[in-house]
Length: 236
Length: 220
Image 1 (cartoon, each protein chain N blue to C red):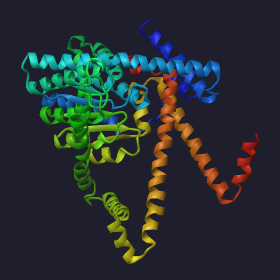
Image 2 (image 1 turned 90 degrees about the vertical axis):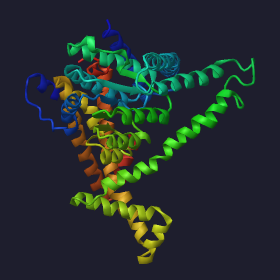
Image 3 (image 1 turned 180 degrees about the horizontal axis):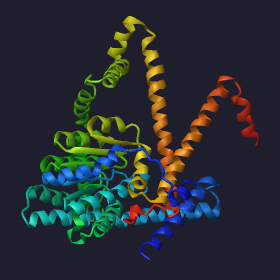
Image 4 (image 1 turned 45 degrees about the vertical axis):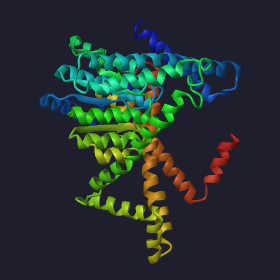
């Protein structure tokens, strides 16, 4: 229904996500300072949906860095992410009309171990001092190590993860943080394509339905009627 | 073809795993196909490791060859890759120092160099937490003050000395912190984020399976 509306040109309201709005500004800052942009698409394999979301955002970031002719550095932990990242960045440079600026080594495999990866990236941050650090994907114990080092290096930082246990670290150390579903909404938000925007609105609608169901559940529990309805589901 | 084939692969494999999840995965047809696909994934993953090794060696070698800034670190990287990989790949039958069993060169290097270095990196997290906490807990606004008070209470509850201190006032305080802060406000917010993220992940997976989402392939 929402996709149909979007295709018909009906305006669909999407609330602003400051972290995504800030990406272009952050890349612009890097251009002005003549320093690179660091993008980490998480440290998980390509079979994680968070990594795919990170790779999708990488495409948009690479397009902006190509337009501004700003160096981009993308360290990865898995070879499959390396292959996907290289493909996405190459396409972004072609789309931006700057294929000659594309270098295969923009996306690099740095280490397979979690903390070896972290040490490599932290070393890079302290030596090169990138103007902008963008972390989008699945992060674990290294989230704070990366974000704090970036903070100490004076970089503007934008992070996004769907892992609630890592969110406080990013919020404490980064300038902007995409929380939970915002990470998955990013590709639709940035693309403005009717089909994807419609999907996003449909997702919001589902959330409203779930909230209503939760409220009904609370009311049923309060009135001791939950068991009756649950047993109906079990029987049928 | 460059777009159609990956989309077809994503659709078919996605569909197989969705069906396996909802049906009996022990069944001969669906379960067998999904297990087969997972085996393929492991095999492809093994081959792509070579891609990673080639990438790291090529980038590092270029820096060493052109004497770029910090080339010495790249040289150490190349040497580390070779020293760890070569003895580990050689067959055990040649010498007890080869292979990856206990007592081999690979094992010694892992236990005495790599593991302590990784543990050191992990241990530095404590200092990073302290500096991040200092910045987050500065009571500049009403929200930051609430965060500071809540965090102080939770920290007091978490450490035995703090718990003993709280018990001086009332033995019920630690239980109240656990029930209302950790099990109430904290859990409710976490569940909200998890439900939102799960819906987002499901919607994105559906977009990928149906070929609507192509940005992960560099397509719009």
